[in-house]
Image 1 (cartoon, rainbow, N blue to C red):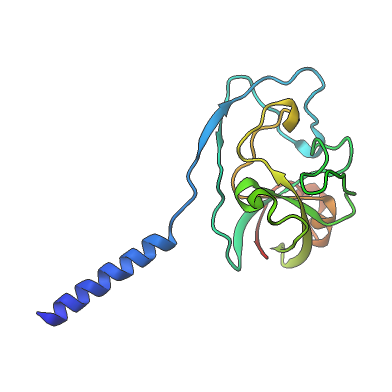
Image 2 (cartoon, one colour; image 1 turned 60 degrees about the horizontal axis):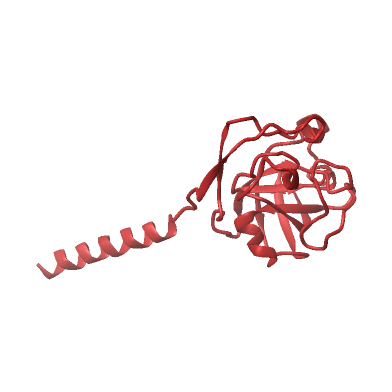
Length: 183
């Protein structure tokens, strides 16, 4: 009987451990899209513009950061007049497309705690270090402050052209790539 109780205890403990490790980030809400005024959504890098009435999910969290955090790499211009909108959140500056910089989804951005820190991005069989300079806002969007673009999903590393070049991705495939990243 004691052996059975021990096995049962071990199974329960293992299940609890698995469940704790499997906690996920759940949506925090959503917003309805608003049609951008004429000429107010920059479509550089094939950026999406909000659609009137469409529901967009929002997040205040991102998946847990690990030694190989799974993410989607997207492309963004951090230059003045680019599809990134205003200056970067970390330093209120614009950054050259020739500099390896990124914006992280809201949960990963951690209120600016990762500002000016470098992350390592692995994709396409290569890796590159890039500096965090901005937030890819997962909580808001579809307004002038966000260039009338939808909120970012919670698993985005939004990267400059320099990152895509360093990963050796052909330009016609820029925009959406499964990657891992680490601090």
